Length: 154
Image (cartoon, rainbow, N blue to C red; front, side, top):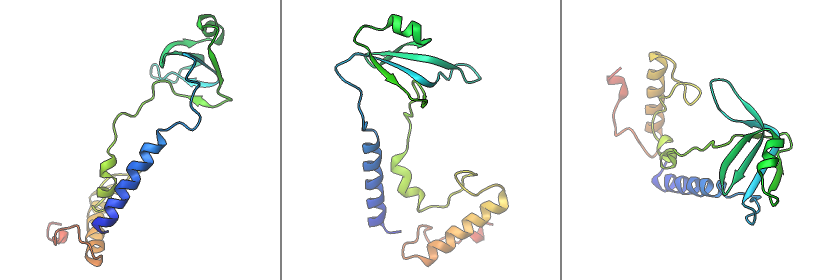
């Protein structure tokens, strides 16, 4: 894998992640309240899944989770009602931690992660992954092992 290819891969990944954050059907921005109902609203409260019938959002913040009747009572007359059509809603489920810059790097080094991200399950499989990575690097035009022979350490 060449540096030029890695640079293109990293750039494409950053663009993809940026575009994936753009909503394809944005909420009506003129309304300050949204009432979600008609699907599985998973609250993530407690050790077991808890579901609610409705969720009310005002100015981008969740202000009520509970029955649809109570949510309608609390909502203003201009509320935007959004039927989930049996889809699932996960309130406040935000991934604020990612390593987009590492995507290309991980393609160039030995993947020593256990399943499901990798194939290492014990010492023997770890050794095999290192050997496979070394052989792959030696057969490519771009060596990422610095000329080291991992077998000397094994």
